[in-house]
Length: 151
Image 1 (cartoon, one colour):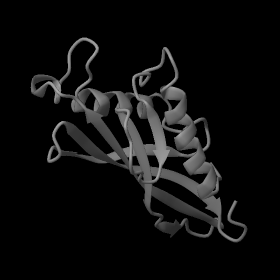
Image 2: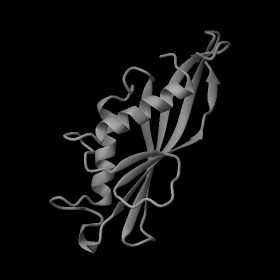
Image 3: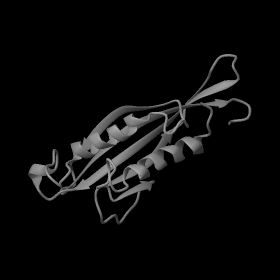
Image 4: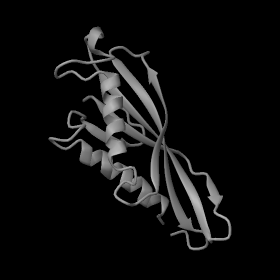
């Protein structure tokens, strides 16, 4: 699929924002933020950061394959130490949030037919700031552009 980086980024954000609506998989998430924020008071949240955008020219086709590398950081605040990793009932632990995010990305890896594929490359957890816990999910969003026109 031919796309611009802005379209790939917007498709990801739109997918995440749709998933936090009532009745959806991530309805318990309080916000999706583009870029790092200070002063967040309601949790859990997702923060999306662009990392890099390597390109590979696809032979003589006049097309360029692009990988938009993105980190999605999920942050929870859970006072109960027993529910921070795997929650129960109404409390979602950090692994619950990570798994729910992976579900959302797996339902439509083309992000509404905007990109070729969305791949979860890695997940790392962070626990240094009790009662907060976090994960960083590195995602590869693949799409193709016409080399000369960049569309």
